Image (cartoon, rainbow, N blue to C red; front, side, top):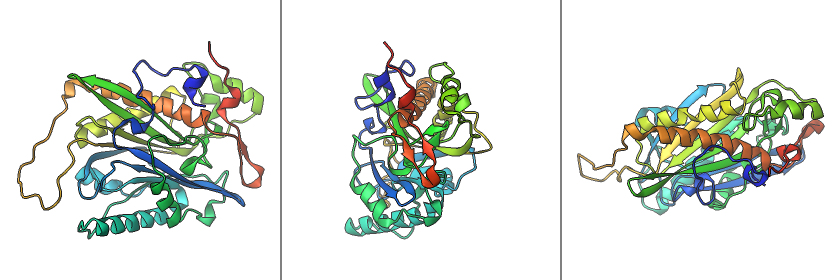
Length: 345
């Protein structure tokens, strides 16, 4: 069940066919979930393209709204404006192990495709799932990362899966969520999609469509923990946005979080990464000194900002509505938002 299945419509723009980040052609998502014996954790991998991203890098940008996080790979993205690997999302103490697995994956892939590789910049983002999982065991390993990559597809699961298995959002069960919007321009339809890993917000602040839903739910479950966690947002589009324009767009993902009641607490790391599948760089052996590219008209960028905000808001709600109840270590329980939603007429 996603938020639209309950009759809630976010924003005014039209979603794509799947209403997922994978409405951007070529983008797929895979999960590996680790459960049992005190564990509720995993890894989620966003593949930006079906071919090798290291051979033909993608325009990319990052933005850190609140830096309480342990992300890897953002420094080079900010310097060069390109993405050259899949993007992995996991728990806080597994960033290093997942980074190592992505290095191994890219070495193997480049060797198989005869692409020279001497250095590589894996991108790994994280949320702390210690409230529902024994994070100290660092239970996500190379085989999980490879399995997530192998399972990547357009119609991927949402909710308490992969990197979202042990997360908490506005005092309820968080997880992985996604949404997309279509942007018709010059006789062609482009797509913009968002995927989130939600682990942020207070229940009392939670809002849906302007309604203070969190206050109503709080009276039923007596939950009001502080805003302490993180929210990772991955944005993809096939619009020909430069890395500078991508950075402007991903900043507007914060609007979607704010509309749901998040005020970006001290202990919450909000990290956004955005990439475009257009204007990819040619292979390193391309002899040209000047390369052709399309340019997006900055005077039309308001529609991109709106799409980023709407997608983020709906993706967070999907991460909560699609998640089942999860009981973690020490008996901690996080309930699904779906328990408290009534179908709107």
